[in-house]
Image (cartoon, rainbow, N blue to C red):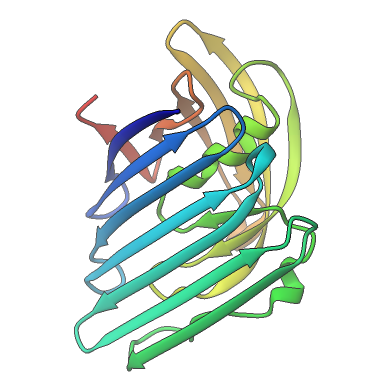
Amino acid sequence: MAERAIVWEGLDAWRAEVAVVRLEADRVRATGTQLGVDPVPYRLQYELETGANWETQRLRLRSTGAGWSRSLDLRHDGAGGWTCDAGETGKAPFPEPGGDVAAVRGAIDCDLGGSPLTNLMPVRRHALHVHEGEHDLLMAWVDVPSLQLVPSWQRYEHRSRGEDGTVVRFSTRDHGGFSADLQLDRDGLVRRYPGLAARVGD
């Protein structure tokens, strides 16, 4: 098992994230903290755990800001079924946490808003950091800092591979469409996500 501490900075807005990532041959565990100012100043703390083949088992989240806090416990049964428990105190200026888990049935990955970490799982499962391929996937996407759960259809496509890592094109049909060429290291972790985040301290 390899353990790494990774720091990303936001490219689209002021944001910082640090994650302690424990990589095994077919799974990952991670804990992290994200700080941001958009749409309001917030702190997010998370714990991520996958099972074999990089399939999400659990994502636990807590976001806090001035006069409010929220929590979300998102769990996957390994067969495309999801459950979530959400809570909040105070009043925040965005949608309520949680959502309709039926809308993400069939997904096997979570996707954490603003974070490059969760791009790891589909990349590693389909070995896109190693060889060619493209895959369309349904994600259980969690907005940050609201912790609202929504479905997201995404595509991952291997573009090139070099000595220092791989480029995988990420795109989504949601919110008018988006595409970015992710620069990954040899483990499949994001080095640079154009328009979102870049690693610092490497």
